[in-house]
Image (cartoon, rainbow, N blue to C red; front, side):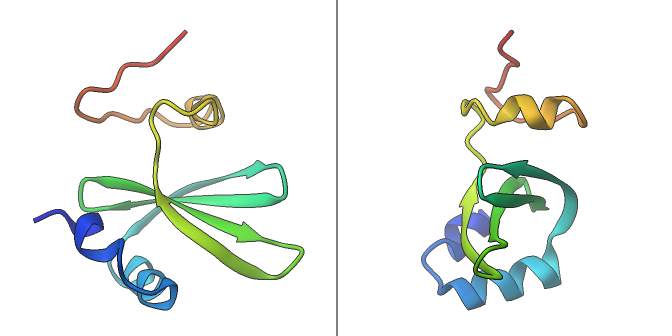
Length: 88
């Protein structure tokens, strides 16, 4: 069963608890007003958008492997996923 599919419709508090209990922290990047923490939960990479101005987590999303933000991750780690290829 897909852990993100089970979790995505839960409240933000429940998502946060599940991440901290069951996911593995990978790395952080800065992106506009956010510090984005990347976690691995099962087979899914999840982004945690931390808003420092408001001192809170705004949202948790499944990593979009086609987003331009991926270049920040590629500088530091090797991400592999089914159907994914690094764009140059």
